[in-house]
Length: 186
Image (cartoon, rainbow, N blue to C red; front, top):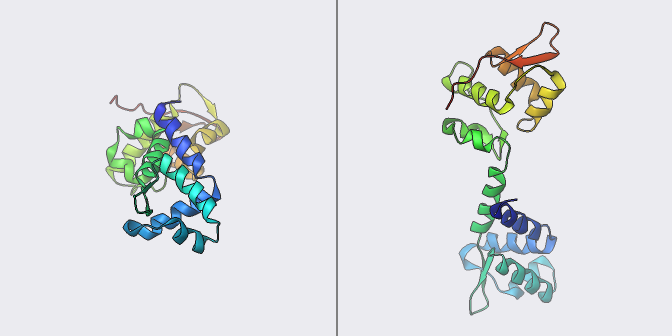
């Protein structure tokens, strides 16, 4: 695991504590004004000692900062960095970086939308997904489905798009798939 991924895991694991997550959420809601331990404890219905402990852990992780006057503020940059690190770990992330015009169709490493069918980006998406599949022989439909499920919820729709655009070929029975046209080397 990379240092960046380990850091993301540490930050996200710390937020698995309900108390720390609630404290950070309330701090974020308060914005630049921030809050004291007591101001956080009352609306969260938590003892000040528990809020203080949560704030200390959040501050140690860089998710909160305290000033000399006892006011804490959320620092969400670390959380954004952790989310970005997780995004970079997604199986399609490396390939997607070569297709910047397609990033709007993905969210957190998953296909979230499809470009218009007659557009240039539709063809690019087919090429990207073909490269992601990296087929070197014949595969059963369930193998193709499992690979596509790593990046999309609409496995059947994406598989159909790949067949329709020629990036994926299927036998007459519709149960065995193989590579279609070859992507251009990038």
